[in-house]
Figure (tube, rainbow, N blue to C red):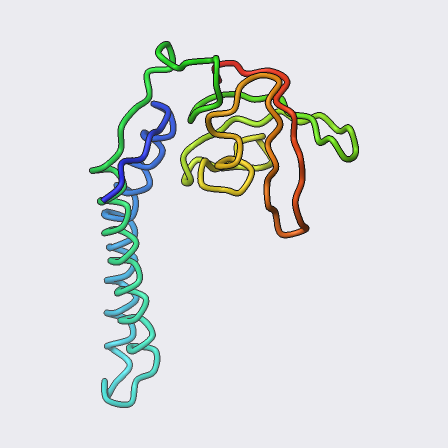
Length: 157
């Protein structure tokens, strides 16, 4: 059981998704199963089997979300140490090969959104930057090979 750290908004989003799956998701699934059951012999009803399989997947997703929420902790952003990269840090880095600069927020896996500049603490870049200080160079193994990034700035999200 691992503890995951979230922003207040990120944890609220998870709780809302869980509540939606418990209520509307389960109600929709029950409706699908009832409709499939009404179509005749259950032993030869592929639609019923598919609905039951989908119900199992829904329950698995609900169970996983319940575990995530139970093990979630909210990070007090005022206590984040900006002398080094940690979860919920905003970090400006420079790719030393092409001199491109990027800014990323390091977040929990479920909050990651590359388009919004949020990368997972468990991603190669996120985990490779953890603990680095301004001026440090992180050599990170990514699918395309090893890339060196220099840490330029660290701040709170």
